[in-house]
Length: 118
Figure 1 (cartoon, helix red, strand yellow):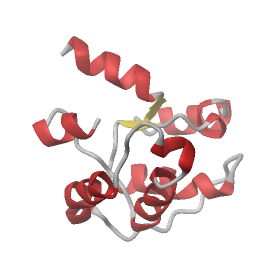
Figure 2: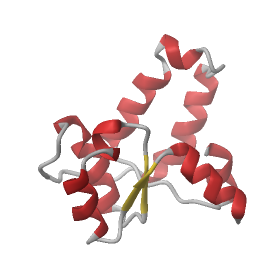
Figure 3: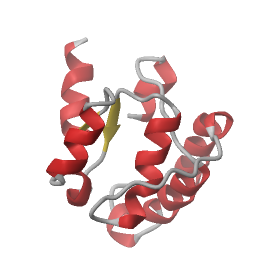
Figure 4: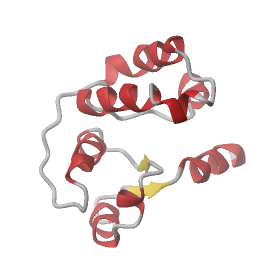
């Protein structure tokens, strides 16, 4: 995904809260087994840092911690939320609400498959 952002194939939409959460997740041992380094995390911030808006959007969703993801997507007029989070992916009401605003939720694998087709 980071390579697709660097090439300009996709434009990330994030918030400061989401960036902090991403850094925390990337430091987890189960994620580190994929070879993620501190340098990789720094690269993510170098790419997304200039795009970080202040976002405060209250929406009713299954996991309140996911409000920062939804808020960033809304504030950035995103077309797609890329996530492996089942609370986002399986929340039919949220997916419908977002679809009405032109935003869909896809898994990383689905997004990579789309990028491979382009």
